[in-house]
Image (cartoon, rainbow, N blue to C red):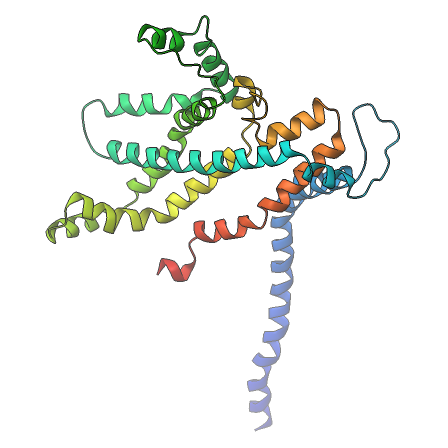
Length: 310
């Protein structure tokens, strides 16, 4: 009786000890596998962000030798600067508009290419050409092509009897939007095309058997299944458009005046033209404060939860 009781209890006494021995290596493995990412984030995200916040609280300049703590003076100066609010407004509508248009054009081109037809490979190559050009080089090419004296595009417009200055304050913003869409439509096209390739053909066959037209199949089958892909493409494109610098700086330098000054160009000019690192860092911190609360909302629409997938 006693021996049987001991024998029955023995396995139960060994399980917790075994569990603890297996649990310790698992915890260590998690930290070991996470260590490279944590170190990377600390070196390239946490520490630079902390240093930027500290610089924003000082009067550090290009020529300063003694850095003085000034508290929130830089933030107050940036918030009182009309150029900051102008750059914030331009960046906001520029990001939203270019992201929406590149998503629409990328989706249209992806739907066009997602079928068999002669010359598909050649068209695929042509569509991808703009994204292979560096943004700064693209801006330089357009600057030469749009030159009022020697540019090809103004010469063509003059031959048609049109006297249009493409660097007019009312036209230059639209020109930048067109340039952004031309260059980054291939990016959204690749993402959306990959999503289309992953859609099961059985759903379209079932929709055809039910008598659905192509438009009905697109609205009821394609768009719902592509929603996570579209949100992912829009999120990545929006983040990239939000920090646009090179192509606009090369083409217009943020002008005329401050009409095409983005937040990136504003921060750059504060740091390397005006020489005030404190003001530049304060502007960058304010932008971070504005953007960071929006990131979880956007990611929640991009990442598909297990319950949603079901």
